[in-house]
Picture (cartoon, rainbow, N blue to C red):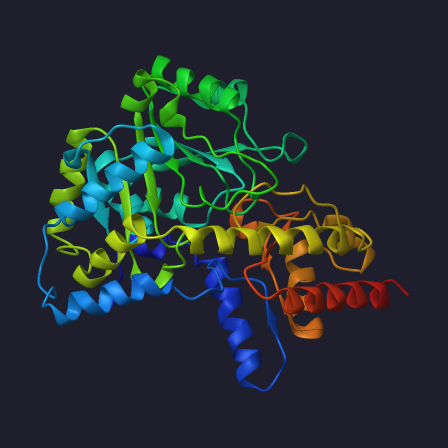
Length: 394
């Protein structure tokens, strides 16, 4: 049977591919350490789980409004006001089945054929694929390593054409862990207002920042910039709720309404039980969020120095998320591999350490390592990588 062209053009997820290969080796009895995970290794906090159980017992297992429970939307509005001094009304918020679907719905309602979306590299793997699924065109702008993988206003201005509809901004970033400063966001925001470009601000890692760094939303720059911003967030990373699938968007009413209409004809509504759990997540204790953040910070502090001491590895120290994104080009050359993809494949097959090749993020010289696993496992993984490299260099 002939499949739709839009599906045939999709690039498989590199993160899912490496996870599948690692699981295959584990199933065969190999002691694989997986550093490809894009989710916290902590369970969902107990008070959130209890809220879900309570909701089920009370019969909250039916359809909800397509845009989400009014009480959850109100909780999100309160969170945005408290954390970022951003004032939104409930009709400016849509709750979706994960931030990934919210992004998908946004591009579906936003883009017409050949509309362009500027995507800085390195990027999260699904951004360009979702743009292509909406018949749009991804336009890549390189966030240079020497600039902490961040794009500049001059670079963005050079990429803007009369077909440019939106810019995707992810801070803290997956895969680099870097944050844009208040000053950088102000300059980018003003440029987008000047050129009438929508800013898609993915802030899913906002709670996971380290060593005194501060997350700042581009919507905080000014009312004019806020009016051109769709803020994307969710509970997957901050509250270790990846499997609950709750994300949301906040932005202009007309866009939110269109996304709601699309949702009503696709997923109907986010899972009712997960929505009640999410209300508890935002209205209950935030102590588990801070406990998890501190654990990630400690892991990063310990393993960063160990990683960069490996021959041929260089790495910008991240400020957020839970990934390291080292440049492994020289390391690949030192160990006899033509490219970093082959180096990463050998790491998995020979050293039994699963990392994600940077080519899937638009950065072929790098690899992504997640430190969302125990410190003991992380140190073991770094030791294996070092041993692998040193033996190959002999």
